[in-house]
Each structure stands twice: as C-alpha cells, then as structure tokens.
Image (cartoon, rainbow, N blue to C red):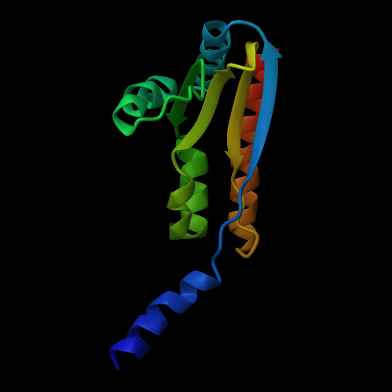
Length: 153
C-alpha cells in the first residue's frame, strides 16, 4: 500500500519536467562597471534587488577547505530579484512556478578572458505546461533579456 501511495505522489512530478537554457552575453569592459550597469538596469525597472551572491569569493574561500586549487572566476556575482506582477502571474498560472523566482542574473569574468565580462541568466521554460505558464515565463524572459541588453549597451 505504501508503495502505491508513493507512486501516486511521484507520478505527477514526472509530467511536470522543467527545462531551461542559459542565455549568455558578453562585453569587453570592467567587471565592476558591467555589474553596476546590471544593477542600474534592474532598478530602472522599479525592481528592488533582494540579494547579491559573491560566488567567486565563496569558491575561493571554500576551495581551500576542499583542497581545490583551480580558480574558476576572476570575479563573479549573482543578483537576485523578483518583479511582483510577473511573479504573481507565473504562480497564479501554476503554483509550482515558484521555482522560477527569484530571477538571477550572473555577472563574471574568467582567467582565460579577464577583460571580457559575461552576463548570463536561466531562460525560464516549462514546455509541458499550460499556455498561461508559457506566457508568464516568456514575459519573465523578456524582462531578463531587456535588463541585460540595457546593461550591455
């Protein structure tokens, strides 16, 4: 009986797979300038940034404890935020869409291209979802792409 119950719980999850691509852009410049341009483009939309994650610093700090010597990023941060109307629309379409919030834009430089700043985000997509979810996620993607394009002008 327990096996049947667990199967019934897991079965709906199989059909609601989420797929995401990564949109990546780059610009020759200084990391700090591009990061500030991303922040300014987000705030220009009337959006408050929830949090910034200092990924490069975290990897450098924890790498020592793990015995990992390879430096992944010269600099690297993530900026987290949500836009209330878009978040509401995606979650009203399907409560599972909470997984797409907060939105995150990553800004980083690497050792092999230290003068090139990359900006990336996950393209929100749920191909096996309702039309309302697909529309809501397209709207989120348009917001993210617009922010990045504005920042990289």
